[in-house]
Length: 445
Image (cartoon, rainbow, N blue to C red; front, top):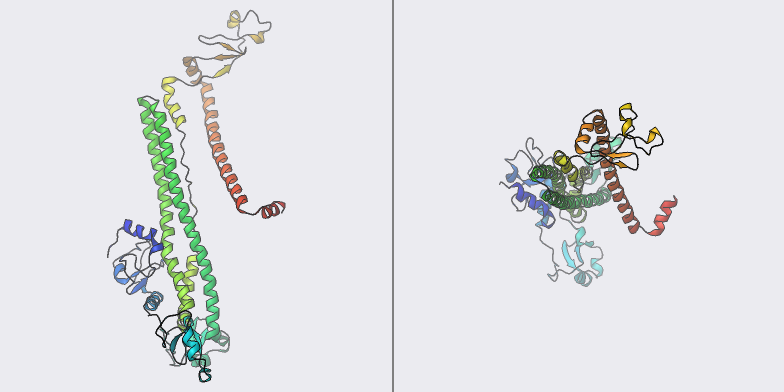
């Protein structure tokens, strides 16, 4: 069954409201569930003709393996709720008499099992009673399972214990002890997985916020560019289109980057939810034998998910462009360059007759050019033509060498100032969150 990428992405974005036991492709409960190497689950029929995973795009090599863990969860979900054998009601807390093999509500338990003849009956909470769905006897020797190997992570019977070496026997423990240790490890792994899930959600929200900020920044930048272009001639329209195209390309690059990271983070959610559901069911409902048969695989899955690291965003949501600089460059052939204040000291003999009569020293003499005026007794304004002529020579080359590094330095200082503002804002936010006494102690240390 085919599923478009847009529809699949919509399902992934709303995975929080979906049943983890439903296939993302057919939207039905898993039928003959299989697990791909990327840890995503599908119905065998839905994935049989696919060469790649529909969610993350990982290659599917060879025959996919059935997911016995997911099959166990589906079978467990089909179990009917136990009602009281005495009053046919469900009243929490419920109990189960392992001697009578009957469920009892709290009221009937006290009314029927308070007699002395029931003193030997073993009554446990109903949630601790789990139906064994796996094998109860050793597949090799036919003896019931009584031990669990912490080394090989499999169940063992008394014959397996007798046949095991002296060193291997140290790793064999009773089923109750193994179940307790396994529950503790699985609980710790589930806590780490929940933290990982929270981190994935936080990173996903960060990407969404960056996309929103990027769109807003793109809108503001485009509006600024269009407003500037309205004041210019037809020549500036070409510059405007070029800048908009550059912005669009940069935005497309960043959005593609953010959405790719969002897709990777979103693809982790169904697997994370499934593992959390599995850990919860195994710790509360699965029998000890089923738990020990499957918990090693589940623990490996959780550790595989926890070991994944979220790649940091390579871009920010701030999209800026120095449009005025581009417009100034486009206007240079029409308006000329900005006026420069140049100072010159000329002492050649041909300019003696142009020296000021009020000068008492040769140092107060200046060369007068057409269209120039004296400023502060030592500087001249050059006309556009004279300035272009001056910049066309050796001075122009030196001016170009200085101008480019100066512009780069100005841009770097602008970026540095923005980073300092972000750090200051983050520091202020942290100080608002952390208690004042803790902040003072940290500053003293």
